[in-house]
Image (spheres, rainbow, N blue to C red):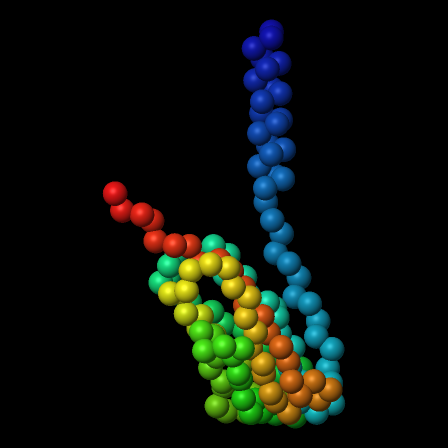
Length: 143
């Protein structure tokens, strides 16, 4: 009898734990429309986390033009030479998505927090500051 009760309790705990681990897909947040060009980012901070020395440092900031006119990004500037952003060349149509690429030089060991300044014709925010951060690990010592 004890074995049956124990087995039943384990089954209930197992089912409860597996349901607790399931994640529901986050609902897409509605972005407010603006008159003129707009720029709404999915995230304004990219956390690289902990990465290996000389790992791939490429990441992307994705945004949508939530305005009524084409968005023109005139420049993107990294806060230092170790952060190199890429700028979309063509105007981003209203409702369309765009990408600003950024490459961090992962040959520099240690923690980092850098910014990318985006200059555009976005209504109410002609400049936008985006942030990247993380930690680059040193190579393991060979014995």
